[in-house]
Image (cartoon, one colour):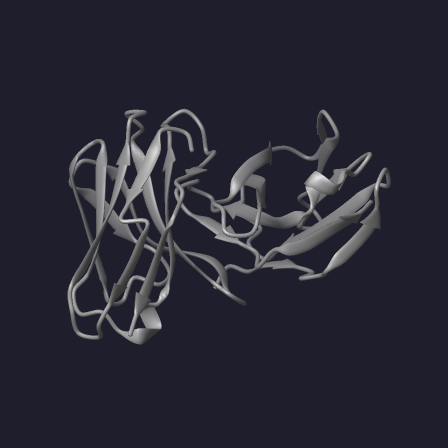
Amino acid sequence: QKEVEQNSGPLSVPEGAIASLNCTYSDRGSQSFFWYRQYSGKSPELIMSIYSNGDKEDGRFTAQLNKASQYVSLLIRDSQPSDSATYLCAVGGNTGNQFYFGTGTSLTVIP
Amino acid sequence: DAGITQSPRHKVTETGTPVTLRCHQTENHRYMYWYRQDPGHGLRLIHYSYGVKDTDKGEVSDGYSVSRSKTEDFLLTLESATSSQTSVYFCAIRGAESYEQYFGPGTRLTVT
């Protein structure tokens, strides 16, 4: 069983702060890593993908990957109330055909 | 929703009845996926397709079947619905050049 673990939260941060979301995975053969944002009652929306060790930045979002530690994280800088959502970590298997999702971390940004 | 539609968006059905959910894409993507999302379990893969008439099972495939006779349509069938299949069902698509998956709006299914 390939496992993806996330803290369920809830995680609360004040507006303007940095939110840090973490994810660990069990399959060392995993090659692709993704973060999705899901608002209540809506479908998951892809916000970041990362394939190699290190950091990848896109606007206020930074994804960090450490394959040796089997760890991937998402940093949200200058958090806004509109960032309040559940964040899902997804890990692709070694063929890339299947994703394994964590149960998500609920983030609340307090104005 | 990346050119993906799902129908119906909501359905209530009785135990033992057959149910078919449809996913339609306008992107001509090769890969299509069916997931279910339940509290405490996250998103779990039911079945996926890597081309017309090419499908494979995911981690929770029991009680479900799929068909893909055209690139744009991927059908999920519950042959005899059970209350444990009450869930939100999402379809996703992926192009052959990327591992990124994009999700449809979802179908909320209630089996009474």
